[in-house]
Image (cartoon, rainbow, N blue to C red):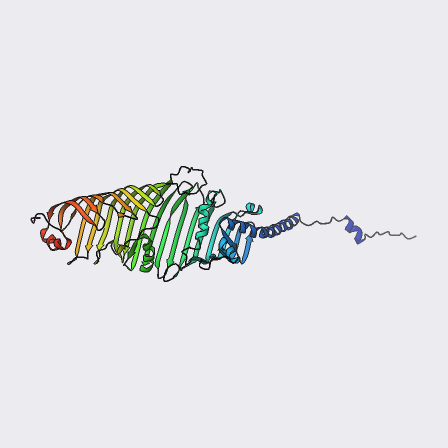
Length: 490
C-alpha cells in the first residue's frame, strides 16, 4: 500500500480573521473634531459679530456698516473693508424724511481698511470689546451746515449729557491702541462766505484711551496743501470726572494767511502775514470745584460748577513771515476760577520773553503783523480778570509806523501790571503799572509808575524817570510821539 500524504491548505479568509485590523490614527479623529469645532465657532461668531457691532456703535451714537469681513478665531482679529460710519440720529432722521435740508450730512467717515483686535470671550456673550484698532486709508467728513452746526456736534453733545458717559464705564470705552494712517479729512463749511472747502492728510496714534488710572498718550500729524504745510501735536492727557492733566507739544509750520485768519477771527484777532509758524510746549491742569463733584462721580459738568487750575508754558515761539513775533521761555498762569464765561487768574509770571510790537499807519497796535479786531469778543468769555502780570527779563521791540519818521525802539524791562480787568460790555478797565528797564542808544535807565487808562483810547498817567538819556536820539521823535519834556536838559 502506498502511503497517503495529507496536506492542509489555509484559505485566505481564515488568515484574515486572525490578523488584527488597523484602526485610524487617534490624532486624525481629534484633528477632524477640532476642525469641525473651529468651523462651527467661526460661523457662529460671524453671525454674532454684526449685532454686537451695532450695539457697540449705538454706545457712541453712530451706525456702522461694512462691505466685507474676515474673522481670525485664534488671534481674535477682525478685518473690515469698506467700513462706513454715520451719525445714528441724523441717519434715522434722513431715512424717516425728517432731516433739515440745511443740516450737514450724516456720514462721518468712510474707512478703506480696518483691523480690530477683539475679545472672543466678550463676543461669545454678544458684546464687542475692542482692544486695538488700526485704520489704513479712508475719508473723514467734517461738514458744517448753514445753521452753523457741525456734523459731529450732536453725538459729541450726547457724551456731555449722558448720565453714564462711556469714559466712566470700566472696560467699555477703553482702547489699548488706536492707529490711523493716510486718512483724508474733507472739510466743507457752508456757514462761511464764501463756502470753505479743503482737505488734508491725517495720521493719528492713541494709546491707553479711556483709562482713568493712566494717562492717554497721543500723536497727531496733519498735512493740508495750500493751507498748512505741517501740523504735529503729541503729549499725554488724563481726564477724570473731576479734572484733567494734559501735557502738550505743538509744532505748526507753513500756516497760510487765509486759514490763519479763519482761526484767529473768532478769538478777536487777524493777521496781515502770509506765512505763520508756532512751537509750544505746555502743561494744563484743571479741577472742578462744584459741590456735587467727587472722585467717583459719573456726573458731568454742570452750570453751577467752577473750575480752577494752572497753565504752565515751558516754551513758546510764534513766527510770522519767518520773523519772530513772540518768544516766551517760561509762563505760569494760575486759574483761580472759571464759571459761566468769567475767567479769574492770580499772578501771572513771565520770564525770558521777547515781544515784537508794531503800530500800523492807522494807529492799531499789534503783535507783529497780528492785530486785534475792534469790538470782537472771544467766544465763551464774558469777563477776564488778572491780579497781576509780572515780567522778568522782558525784551520788547517797538516799531511805530504811525509817525514820521518811523520810530523803532528796543528795550529790556522788568516790572508788573496790576488789576488787569476786561469785560465784554465795558472793555478794559484802568490798570496800575510799575516798570523799569533800559534802552540802548536811547536811555541808560528808565522807570515808569502810575496808571494806564485803555478806554476810550490808551492814555498813560505815569511818573517817568529817565537817566542817561540820549537827547540827540530822542529829539527828532519827541514831537512825533507826543512827548513833552519838563526840562530840555534831558
